[in-house]
Amino acid sequence: GDSVTQTEGPVTLSEGTSLTVNCSYETKQYPTLFWYVQYPGEGPQLLFKVPKANEKGSSRGFEATYNKEATSFHLQKASVQESDSAVYYCALPTSSGQKLVFGQGTILKVYL
Amino acid sequence: DPKIIQKPKYLVAVTGSEKILICEQYLGHNAMYWYRQSAKKPLEFMFSYSYQKLMDNQTASSRFQPQSSKKNHLDLQITALKPDDSATYFCASSQVGNQDTQYFGPGTRLLVL
Image (cartoon, rainbow over all chains, first blue to last red; front, side, top):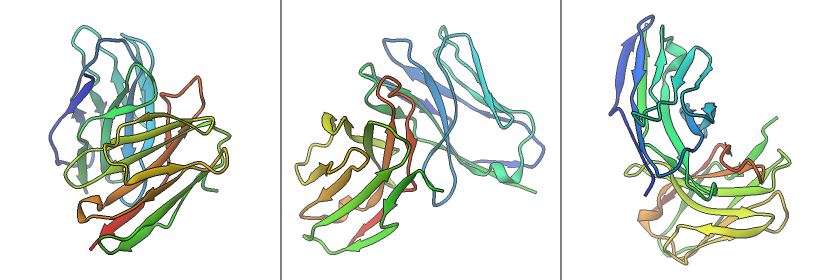
């Protein structure tokens, strides 16, 4: 079945350093891929999505490239800020489109 | 203004009781969902509804029953509560035809004692 595996967290970084959160997926289709971000006490918010293989998505300085060959969708940011501290989820829809399958989430903690 | 409202934000219940979690969305969407997030598992799909009809159910237990009284409402009734039901329950919605792009509410955090 469909599955998503992410970098184990927590990831702790000082402000201004670069971030990579790995996301690998398994699916028999070529779905849209998603990154969601969840702040404490809130629901997941869509960060961005990429509908097509070999394309890049970005938002708020975060970016990820849909790599069909490697079945990866790694999240990157060149310079993190304290306000980026949150949980990041990689996700994909199942073939019915009714259901999103999420990775286990990666906790990011950024300190000054 | 919040586009997806979930009530209550926090809920404490005793084992064996019944509770209803409320969800209303004001995004004009016609597909709604329930997900669960517990300490032990990542975000886990429970149900999907489209035009107030059940489309998918990944919850093994019949103790969980969605209820859609209006097209922008999808409540979740949980009966015979167990401590293992303790989790945060998220409602989400999307447009039919663009169902993979789902928007989530703030969640209801349920603690069963």
